[in-house]
Amino acid sequence: FDDMRRYCDAKEGEAIPIYTNKDGYDRMRSIYPYAMMDKAKIKGYPAFSGKIMPEVLNLDGARISSVVQSHGSFETLGLVFEEMDTGKRFAYYTDCDSVSERGKELARGAEVAVLDGLKHTPHRSHMSIPEAVEVAREIGAGDTYLIHMTCGVDHDETNASLPEGVQLSYDDLVLEI
Image 1 (tube, one colour):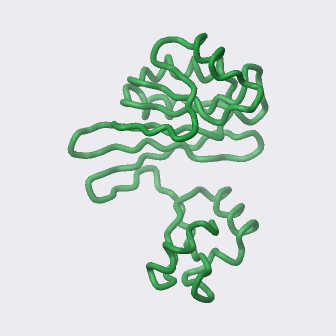
Image 2: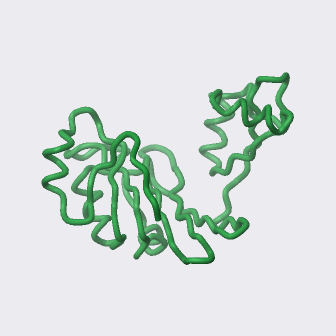
């Protein structure tokens, strides 16, 4: 949040809207109480206005669809971004231990999907790499990138074992859709 303070300054201290679910809003209020307000207290402080994410958020020329995901003991949101002119879609499902049938339906056939893939073995709040590969198969995106890996995942070895169209993400990855 602190890295965003310059954007708040550019808006003359007006809060930047943050779309989330109730769990996310409550967590932000508890971790960043100084920043969750309609206007920055003083110049140089961040300010964010929490908004509950609707199932579909329509923007100028784009749409963001959201779906609730399980992340261990709380819920996060999975997002599918769609460009209205082209119909191209980008699915982003991280910080989750599974993807619901609704989530798979929303992402099915997207140009790119980004999925949580923490490690090779099961974890209580993240998908394992084999679980993510299965979700990738069901979604059928043009390309799928796994994200959120632990340092115990050997990048080259794991990438070599993944099916075509699925690969590990990496720092400085730039995607053009």
